[in-house]
Length: 490
Image 1 (tube, rainbow, N blue to C red):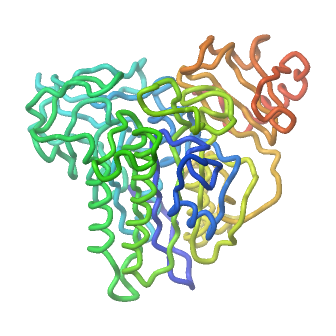
Image 2: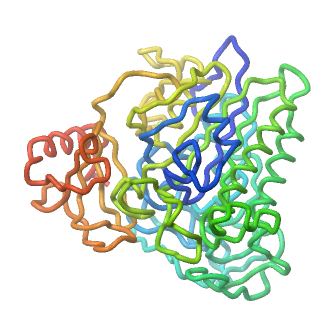
């Protein structure tokens, strides 16, 4: 894919860019965000040297749609997936004509790598001779519980990371609780999954596994691959290309099985031990970047909030994974989608940023930071693109401080329920959580008489529903969101 008119900026050297995307790490899971039962020294130092966002939201409260939004800059409801998440053997979700952040950065000269959890689908070859594929013109239901035995793992998959803007890929197809349990390299499995893996913990699905597969080694493997790629591609000359690394950890998503050297380190259970591993991985990546003379930009975030419904993951008495926020992973409430976001790099002003922002903003903001003026753009915006080229939903000011905005930011719950936010106001179009917390309720239409409304300024824990008193403000938010996004046409 080519993106006409997109060029690198002139002048200063382009930075190496690393995005570390943790899995199910909540707003309260880092000590720089209030955790007290353990410390995350690497990420604390990164936050101190950079910008720590306190009101950042994923575009969904669950894995797949959140990752779709991060990499494409588009709301996940623009895809065929309207609720839930993909299974490990579902087809590719990102359409061939949808550019990713990797496409855009590669267009201006970046080397690109994706390492870790993909969970955006792959067009697998099937044992019956066919091929898995998502048809956007037909109704689509993800196969979250698929056992994976209908796939022909001897043949390459199609429409994976190498077809979505990345030059290099090593990872796994889905979450660490869904088959196949094997590493992927490029466009195929690294070792054939010929054995049957039995679940380690509640919710892990049985299915095909590569011989010798170990859940507790996965994130260590990702760290090794990331460090090796950064060292191998370190520039020797000024004209060598900059790098973009998208590193998506498997943890602290379930099963929480940290490697032996991290077991017990937190003192409160395996999930917190896995968080300490993620912190350590960020440190390894930072050290590997020391081999480059280029400026650097490091972004750390999580795909959604933390689940709090699995006692085996560790004690909640001394640690609240989502802080004082209401809800958990998958929910419409802040605990489902409000996430840590840290951005650090040369030339950025450090500090705490309380603006309402979305992870959708990362794609356009990186373009604003590294792209030159776009040919044919009459406004001459740095990094700006005509809507037909990228059609990004986010704002481009994430990396550079600005005042409060009247923009309306959207997100969705596990069941597809829509949430709209404007400054401290939150409109929830669901009769319940839409996710893992009871009562789950059902999604409602934006013109419905049912829903929930919260003022997070006076009620940060979202305990008081003021839906009845919010009609005028709610209608204004809905109208603005529809006008900005065309919601309802998809």
